Image (tube, rainbow, N blue to C red; front, side, top):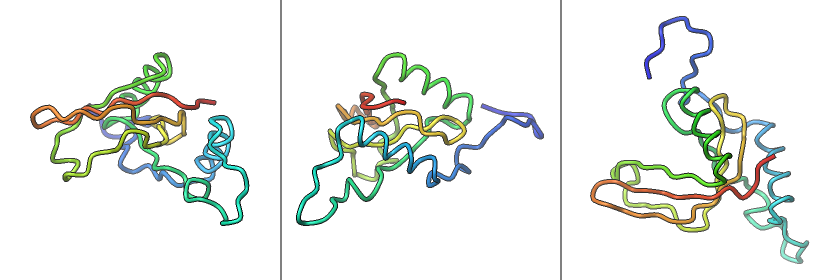
Length: 133
């Protein structure tokens, strides 16, 4: 989607930093509400307790990302399609968690991969919403 130069609300999603305090706060709440916080153990915290899953936004523009997030939250599930070459042979596994952000980089939902299908030269990834504030 092309935006005229100087348009104030045009955001290039590649410039969004997906490592900020709001993301860490979201992850703490999501872990609790999705019952992902394990009981204390003798072995210390697990990776899931220490490191938030990757955060991402869909599309090339903020408006596209915002529309995608609205659709996912309305349906409680979503689907993305990408060229096979983008995955470099490493497809996501069913059960993998990630944080879906809107076009401003604000975390909006914790999602879990439910299905990965390779058809020809495309990878279709389906996911469900595990938590949304």
